[in-house]
Length: 118
Image (cartoon, rainbow, N blue to C red; front, top):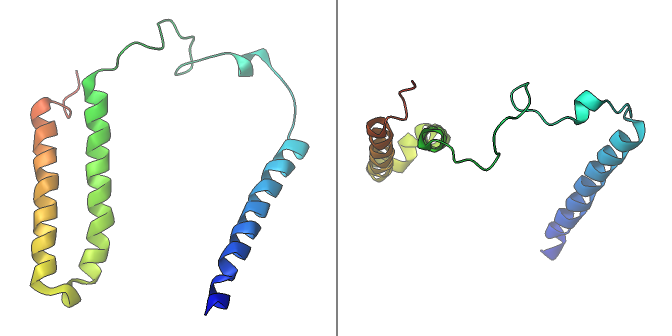
């Protein structure tokens, strides 16, 4: 039974070897043409003119939370929809509770104004 698990370390070593080989090949074969424009710091294509440690508007964080909400929703809705015949009413109620929590988060962001830009 232990022999079935010996493939796992083998695959980990092979994956690490492939990753290290790709990094080494890129380092050895990659072009080395330094250019002052490539090494210059930039922000959105122009020189930075303010402090990098200035606080962001809360709407950026709310949009990030909104993305996570919808990303999680889609991630959990696909397997749920496929197995709905097998999980029955308990699965339906669990998904309704999950979607209710996500809807509350969406309403919170909507009320905070994360969806409105100036």
